[in-house]
Amino acid sequence: MTAPNLLLRPITGSLGDSLKGSFTRAVLSGLIGVLRFLCNHVPSLVAPASLRVEWEGLSSRTRAFLLLVKLSKQPHSTDVEAIRERTEAIVNLVVSKNTYSVSQLEANGVPTEIITAVVTGPTPPGAVVWLHGGGYMAGRAHHYRGVSADLSARLGGVPIVVPDYRLVPEADFLPESVGDCVKVFEWAATRYGASNLALIGDSAGGGMTVHVINALRRTPHYIPAGVVMLSPYLNLHPNYPSLETNKSLDVMLDATSISFVSSLVLKSPTPIPQPTYEEFPPALVLVGSHELLLDDSKKIAENIAKEGGEVELIIQKGMCHVYPVFFAWLDESEQAMHFIANWIRAKVGWKKQL
Image 1 (tube, rainbow, N blue to C red):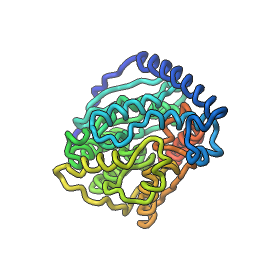
Image 2: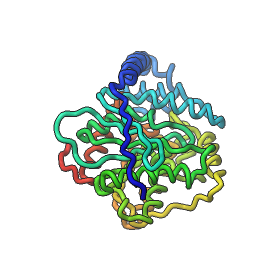
Image 3: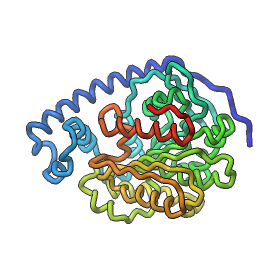
Image 4: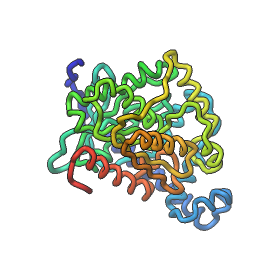
């Protein structure tokens, strides 16, 4: 095990992030306001009847946000760069009002960011390692500053460690993409202690957590205190019922793009074995009821439970893919992030509940 690289390079102020976040919030607030008006007064103009029925009971603000995501959807994409651009556009919806610092370093040779909210009072020991989403082929660590700052603030200033792992198709998935995440988690375990760590991932990052836990079993003293998965994308041979039943309801993903991304991962030179779930750490899985990937989350939770593991599955009515990260716009997302923070506190042993 190599010693942690402690040569942190702090980015002071993060003024650019703050200005970008404020501008993004202002623009999106205006768009959501217009769509909210249309949802309330001429709903037939902006959403089909089938979707309006499914959205019954949701606030007009929530419906307007989901509609905004749906209108920006680019279905049936099989172009790597287009998917990467689309991912970055979605990430721009994730904004935080928290003041935070960013440190960049190489953790066991892997480029990594550490995001820490500026808070008053004592900070609990430990950290959270966040594996970003993006279909294993998109997303960067810096895209996750907003959501990381929000979670850090909710946890009393705990640092959020985000590896900039290598992406397919350029990377070999198991030894490079997963391997990078394992290296960063081992770095964090050496620095903070594994019992003081939680592991979280969204979408492909959620699927990645399962592969990372499988790899970490070789060194049990590196197992985290708890794992959180937001809309995990794990099954690379998707053929489950929700791909059909939620086809017209998922405002973000489509089956063609999912199949394309899965095929790219499966083309990696190193074979990808089916993960196993024995001795899996306590897990929390959150997913929206309208997701194409709904059954992926259900199966992961079922597999953990079958092996005697502790798992909690939350299926939020009417919600979209990785809905908790949109806390700036949705009450359901704000409640989810609140729940996640308290769940992590309980599992890691940070006693104060928010």
